Length: 169
Image (cartoon, rainbow, N blue to C red; front, side, top):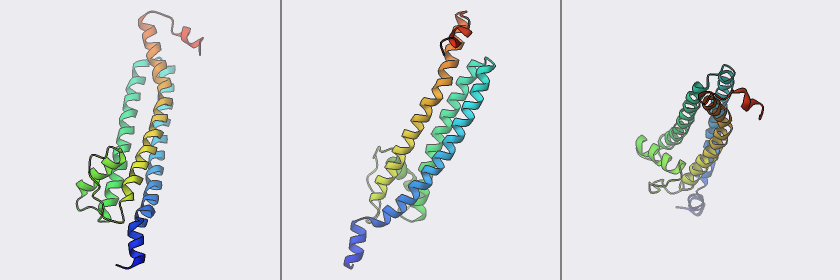
């Protein structure tokens, strides 16, 4: 092996290039889905709140959480498919499991990537951390309508006029 090839492998240069491209792909995918989920939740729950359908707001909140979860699963699949199609790991199942281990930063799998590609595990972990942080911020903003519906529903049960809370907002 010549010096140039050794340097490329030692510095994991191929993993940086693939990692940067895939990180952008995964973050754009995440952003588009997150935007759709949050937008639909906000619009639907706003309408439900105006119609005094407070229990249904909870249903939409939990459905949105499910879709956020599925978004993360899809991103793990995207990473796993890329590892598999580039023949960095021998089986699709192993590729997806490794991606999930790295994406969640749990690290329950040993690093099985070939030399020259080791840094990819770190980049996959960064994509997961970015995506989880973005999801957490979105969930926090979604809880406003959820809390409002919860409070109004319980005020109705206690026979407290619901418009009482509106005076404080």
